[in-house]
Length: 341
Image (cartoon, rainbow, N blue to C red; front, top):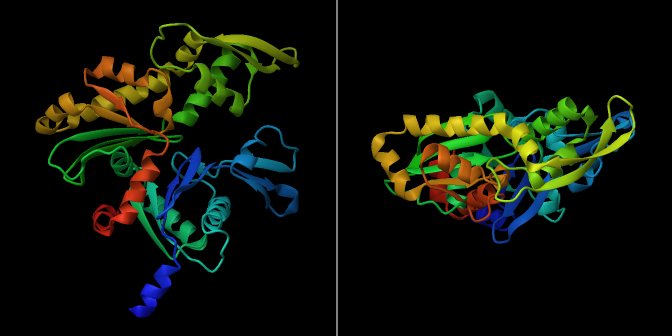
């Protein structure tokens, strides 16, 4: 017992939001220590040697020579490339532990509610190989609710919609349990793809992932804006094959994203229909809480409010709600034990 206490003194407990777009790490006592894109650049000519991870790798997207590829090892909230995810996790864990290789931290990782037992096992095995001593999994929606400050332990309905990079998680929570949950594989990355396809179809012009993301952030919206905005974008003309610049309006981007936003709205409507009436009545007062990077899309809260008739509120910091929620669990072992899947 004394040895265990001694060892735990040297162990950094970590909370990880292993997202499709970004990975965030929370260390007990320090808060968020890492916030980087979930991207790895590898050299195919040199036995898949890792050239860069995180922000440095994101800068390489679409700008690398043929032998170096920048890839996203996470897809739709789950691991798509085990080997690369392991290297990425190991790098982030070592960085969070100040590169002390002898430390094997206990880790809590959040996963989407639609994850299968096989995918769940893959996350655990990858984290253990990356250097964890123990791995606990919790649902993203539950972590987001805690991070957003919802009173999940009370006998009342709490609804959270977490729009991430690969998945949108919708959950109704009461008495520390999930009454209803659904994960749809439509979120931020799908929005980027929709913008690329729209510009290609309408203007015969090709833009990259980073440009599409920039368009989404700067002029993307889900509801008509009070004042119209536009931005100049650069890409390659598919007919002439030369660089081209054009002006894109918020109305066009809204049109490009209409199918994505409609899918999210419809999924929320289904959740409201299935929720027991006593809990659904609570939403009239409490409303729906939006978390995740996708919640920052302009007017998504207004669109949901108009189509559902329920108040919709953005979490204080949508981007960090999930990892902050897992961080709260690190501090409260009883809560973690209750919510571990």
